[in-house]
Every structure is written in C-alpha cells, then in structure tokens.
Image (tube, rainbow over all chains, first blue to last red):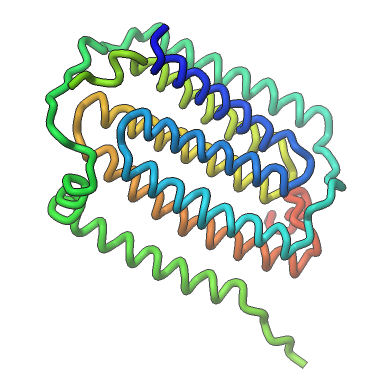
Length: 170
Length: 106
C-alpha cells in the first residue's frame, strides 16, 4: 500500500465514523462537533485530490458559517440536554433496514456495473488553481454566478423575515 | 505529473460517497430531532460534492469544481432558511420534535 492510499483510508474511516457519531450521539452539541470533524476530513479529501482552493472554501463555508449557525440555533433553543424520546422501535428498525438496503443496492450496482475506468489521464495542465477556476467561473458560468448571488440575497431577506418576532395582535 | 487517482482509484471515492449518502438517509429516517435531520441533509450534500471533485480530477476538468461552488451556495441558503423556520416552529410549539408537526396534514 502506498502512502497516499493509507492517508485516504484513514480519512475515509474518520469521515464515516464521525458521520455515524453525528447521528447516534444524544446531545445535539456533540452532534454538531462531530459534524465539524466530518467536514474537516472531507476538506482533507479535497486536499488529497489537490484542489486547494475548494478545500479552503469548504472549511470556511461549512466548518465556519454553517456550523456556527447550527451551534447558535442549538444554544438559542436551549437544546443541549439529552431528553429526546426515541422513535418507536419499529420505525428505528425500518430505518436500519432501509440504510442497509440502500448501501447494499448502490454498492452492488457500482461494483457489478464495472464502470469503464480505463487509464487515468493526466494532461499536466493546471485546472484547479484559483486562477483557472476564476476564469471558468466568470466566463462560462457568469449567469449562474449572478443567479447564485440573487439566491443568497433572497435567502437572507427570507431568513430575517421568518425569524422576526411577530407582533401579537391585541 | 502523475494523476493522484492512479494511487487511489475512482471506485474508492464512489464507495465512500455512497456510504456517506446512505448515512445521511439513515439519519433523516432515524432521528426525531429536526436539527439532526438537517445535519444529515448536510452529510448527503457533502457526499455528492466529494464525488463531483473526484470526477473533476478524473476528467482533469474544472467544471466539476464550479458545480461544487454552486451547490455550496445553495446549501448555505438552505441552512439559513431552514434554521429560521426551525426557530419559528420552536417559538410556536416549544419543541422541534418532528413528530409534533402533525397539524400540517390536511
């Protein structure tokens, strides 16, 4: 086994384990912290694939912005106690069975379909530095880029409107 | 310059992202806490992003990474709006147990 494969295996194990711990831990704060570790290991995968800019953006957006939102919401609602009642046993059993079935079906599909992988080409061109990504983003994907900004603006206005306290009619 | 996928193989990334996606589905079905359900949705989105980046490396093309940027923007917007909805649900009902949200049925 080469070093890179070992790094990949360790990162994959961390990702899967922390994803499971996110779901199974009773305390929502612990779930959020495990999810942060999961996101960091996914950023490690991006670094392993040599897409540095994407890894940095992933850390900023997910581990920074989104997890802060989650943690603030948990603290705002004072949820950091372990008083959640479980779903009925039959529902949980159904969830486990469906998880195993989804895993089994998708894995067998991807193993047995024998995707045409062929040889891994390496053109040697630079395709994932900030320079190239910025050129592609602002030339070919100009319109979707602007629409993304409109989407973020609408989401911001919607969030403010939704979380504003309604005046009670008296 | 050697392609990194020579060492790892694209299949391993496909398997990892399938497992992550299934974990996300499992979390949505298993938990009652709406915040954990949201976190599971984030895990599912990340599984798809990981596969996008892996195939972008496979094809040596930048467009897969551009799509990951857009999906990150949509995920950020989705989380902001979703958590605002959760806060207003919490104000009205006093809990965010998804089994309490039964008055939406017709």
